Length: 183
Image (cartoon, rainbow, N blue to C red):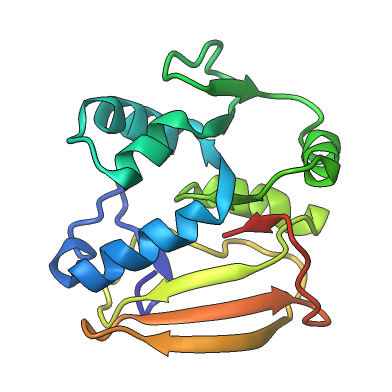
């Protein structure tokens, strides 16, 4: 996320993010993904990832991206061709609540501001892990948009990376994080 609250440029661009990418960030992203077993995305993020990860160089991270279960939230996408992917269009809150009760590791939302915004009123995000980049882009896709209610978060911890990116860990509301969905 940028200092001015955007998680991507107006057309989903991440060109502001890549100059800050370091080996430290790559190692952290791998550790973070190892704690998960399910990736939650919207259609646009899914389409970008499905066009990249199956053809990416083989690394531990690309293996996780390709082999983990991926749930795509979309009413327009009918079939997900990327391996271990499925589309969910109905009863999202009920299905996520069911998934949170099944054995396994946590789920992670990658990108997908629309999914975050849909999940917020359902109170099903258990932890926010925000990578705050020291850059402002002026306009783009906001992480939090048109929220009609106050979103209270409790800071759990912070970590400063060598690039100047801050990792901010928040729990919603009362601050009691539960295993489940991580943003």
